[in-house]
Length: 318
Length: 318
Image (cartoon, rainbow over all chains, first blue to last red; front, side, top):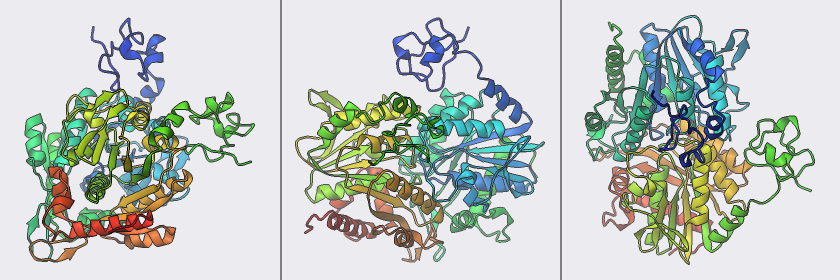
């Protein structure tokens, strides 16, 4: 018999299905202790079945993670969604960053409202085949802070997974998470326990201080049995628009993401340079993939990454 | 009689000292509900008195906040600590980013250990007059992820404030927090309730997507009655080392931090350009203020900000 451990269990967790569940020294302080001690540690939360049924018709679920904040995770998630939509897939983009939701701004749909129908919460449509859900749609003002402890954030995330009606057909659900390995991530992993998740893409910059946190994210994925689809190295060098000289602003002193991927034996999806066209697209809330300007270095690198990703997922690319 | 509201209270909170505390509709789901309902909502947590006594001899306590991650908050906190230490102040630097601690790396003291003595936890000394405390010193390996929900993180933060022995004299305690407005921030504010806190410095980049989160942070500070010492605009333009041309990589499409400060009537402390010498100092874990290279644009801007800050705190500067 295999024992199961919650992803946030203490290191000596006896397992939720052990006779000693909730009763050992290691259980003290564990958030699951009372559930385990009452013998309900292995009971399936009925919400998890609802989530599994809600997401069952979605072909691919991809998590976007980063250890450190500000590495361009939401920008990447947004442009990945736009890229897939431009290739005529049906795409949903779910923003589970509760305290710092930026996806609606980056998709140019800030200020829109979410409507409730008999089939669930209706996401906001950015394009005909691209819809978005975020806590930002529910705040009275864009300046309002969500000063919530973990438990309240977790409730909203669960509700997003359970109640959003993504429509009858969705090829990709892209879930953009906040940086770190805390409440939002534990909740996501626990809620998606009975769903098919293709895996996670981890976004980083080339600096060691960012890679340091990526290693933590790799360990988190392994502990949570989430496969890693690959790592994207963002802000990888800056080409001066004036003289064309490329500088490594965020210097990869320890070999960058590619070397780290070799060490961990995980796929390296590619590099995206610092490109003012990418940041501007985010600021304007538009798709890079509709622009006629084909000269953008960032666009080319992003296209390659999307093609690489589709190959990994074994989806034929043009 | 004034009523008091916890910083994470629901919008219609009747106040912890109200007769209806814990009993109204608004109280449902509030983390303080059971405490309020039992009439203990206004009781002082004895730990808060211990924290207040522990920090009572520290002349200035400054929080470093940012709405968005990756804006250079920890780099700024580290270099601010180095700058103050170079001006011969006694400085403590507390890293309350539990899931992504980077201060030890940036101070060049990664891998050091924290020792316990009869007077409390001994911080790690970076320089004779600069000491650091972080969860990173307590992890078995640098790659270990701290997969903790809020409650466990809060316990550690409280212990840091209560148990670290900063020595008999400290001019500045700089507290570097993770991005956002969630558990760590609520805990910090609640734990420091009876301490003298000078205020918060908010770090941002010039982009609207970062300013969006700064506005949330301003609201958080106001709700928590933390005064805002000022805003620092980081990564403000990049000077190409080859041709000297300055580009706004993170374009301030809505006027940047300075305009936002005017709107909120809060001090603007200054800009720091993207400077590879600053990122390299962080990567190498060294002080910018010991380098002989006086040509660094970043260094000059940082010095001006420190001088500005000391004036705000009414401390004579050379």
